Amino acid sequence: MESLPTRLNAVLDYIDAVAATDTSTAPDVIWPELPEA
Image (tube, one colour):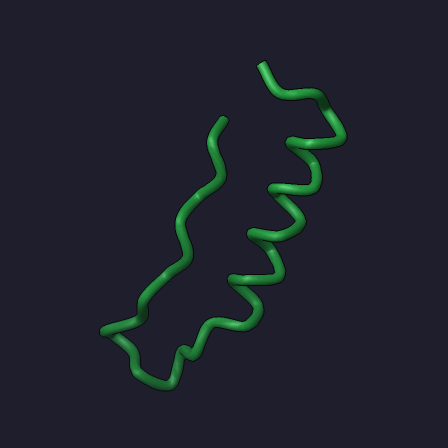
């Protein structure tokens, strides 16, 4: 099991990746991979 700070960093990186996603190509948006739970 990952430590809490490691998991938190993964979630924050995911949020950054979602925010940077180009949604102008909708409905063919390529979403980033979810971090491991």
